[in-house]
Length: 83
Image 1 (cartoon, rainbow, N blue to C red):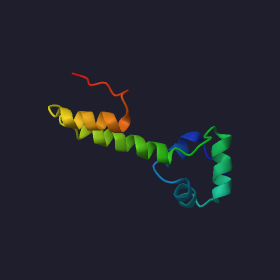
Image 2: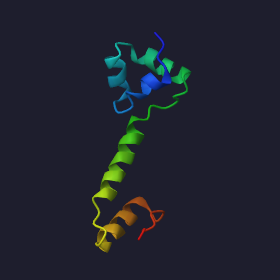
Image 3: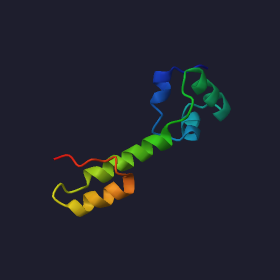
């Protein structure tokens, strides 16, 4: 059974194994189908990492410079302070 990219994208919040299991298809077949519709790498870990970074920044107090400095050290100097 072939799945569309849009349908597969609904499972990006899961590991690829969990997604294949939810769809009752083997992991190999699911990977092959994903590659066929242009998903070269399963994005679960990347999305999880990005969400974690967003949550860290949202928890910062805008008046506390030490928190900003700590986040800047942790995630790099590309994070410019916006005021």
